[in-house]
Length: 345
Ligand code: CP3
Image 1: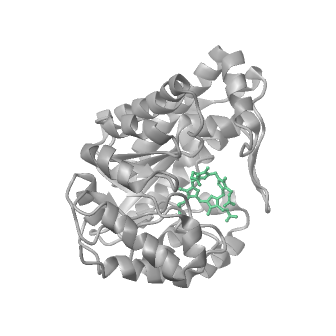
Image 2: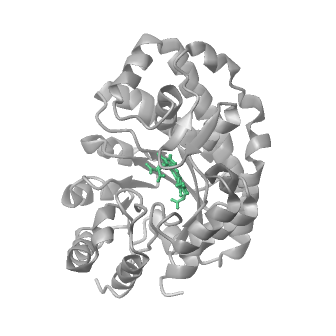
């Protein structure tokens, strides 16, 4: 192993390491030929998520290839709606589709009591990965934030116009609050089980946290994720990373929340601003534009050096501002990793 032992968890507890730990959002996925082979063998994407042997295999693939500091459980944020009893499927080339919850009555059908029956293969994947990973590397568990998961549940798909979702939240406020509460409780229970099975940290993805009015953001993004962290920490002692993607200056309030050991920053947040306003509160993770890794070459190297420089002397975890896209050349990822590992700062 070329990085520092336990670098990911040490950074989350505030230590400054040079070079910093590295992992990438969507490090397992279609840009890797070995992933595509396993995916074909598994059948559908959900079949792969619920197959512990194959899900463990794809979780480990990027670790073997790049010797990264952390593995992230191979699963999806939409397994919670699936486990609640909503129909979820992944149409080829179209992304996720769900039976939409546009009528509050659909909510009455959801069953939060038995989610672990459906999710138990995920806990088995965590156990398998933890036993395959060397102890010096971390395993990250994850879930979607209630707001982001709710947007998929209400729209029935990834939404190009999130204003329709706010309209639903305003119009059916009671039903919407019930949905958020149900997602808080089930997500906390799901993350606790991941940690009990061996996850060393958890990340909560709020991919649709951008462009919201401040009170709405506080009520439906920050507060539910804070409650999840609180519920998790009552039972298990792990660092929690928040990823309220593209929430702009509201990142500062998220970082200041003591329940979060770190925040993951998106592609658009200025690094100097983040280093000044977020780093004093804990670890910062992320930032590199995933599309620069598609391009590779000097623009990628220059951006990577700039990112290392912006967070020099601060607890920092090297990552992207959002996940790798499918046409990322794996060789560019290898080059990026060796550049960071060789960095002297
Ligand atoms: O390597 C990892 O990062 C771990 C696995 C992981 C996946 N999804 C696998 C996946 C993680 C952490 C996620 C999180 C996720 N899923 C998010 C939050 C992060 C983000 O990207 O904003 C969201 C919004 C989802 C929902 C989702 N799942 C979408 C929108 C899609 C379709 C987009 C696409 O790339 O096809 C998925 C499918 C999905 N999740 C794939 C993978 C590897 C591709 C499925 C396939 O193999 O065909």
